[in-house]
Image (tube, rainbow, N blue to C red; front, side, top):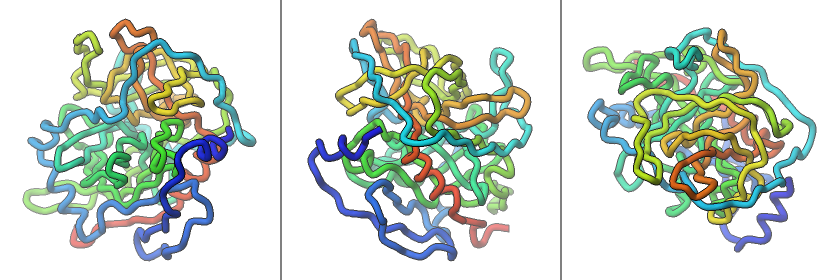
Length: 354
């Protein structure tokens, strides 16, 4: 996949970004290549304040994030998604816990909703825990973490795994640092609409105090990771679709997790979002599902498989006012490089939390 050639065809802009510190184990260094954009979210000292913002009323008030989450029209099929090297797999971390059942499918506790603010307003997307060295990594869509209009990260980001009707049984996980592709952050290229977010240890309320809930993947497991895979694999897609179809029919509430199942194929080319190299699955998910995982080889017993995409766009591909496809960026070696960088960063326990 020749993203560098694609990048040069767009207006040039933006400077190389320096990595920032998460915990005491990292030093500030300059990026060697403009493939990753890394931005700090909440500091350790401010993380409990971020979690405290997300009261039951605030969670309920949050809306699905609509910025770059859907497209309608009769689109040509793109066949540019391709491997840029050998295929790779990183094994999942299984918690063997379920977030409930839906049509005889055990729903994974790794999947939940991320909540965040843009211009002071509360929004949410879907997301999933993914395997990492320090059990602290979340995968979601790039547009659910980075606001390309303002060229900045969203604010007050938290992840609630296994979210169900406002419940946070496994705690609140505050975002420490986000990582997305340079082409998404600087050129709004939705062929790179993915992000990985390191989170601090989870916290729960006990009376008026926060208590430590432990590391994310220790509690809910972590999906494995797959890249440079052949198009045409069967995948499960999980998420929290919410919005109405373009015709006004509202079939989802967003309060409970849903799934689709099907084969990936070379997805529609969507010029509005510079999508030329994506993959897609036939699915009637609506916006709200953005960031939800595409999972290969999902085990209904262990509730894990291999993350091989994230929901980027809900698409009405025949322009009949009904969403019928969901698309994902193709996960290649550049995706894997960003994932591997993020998967080796430590965050740890929050100060002042028992």
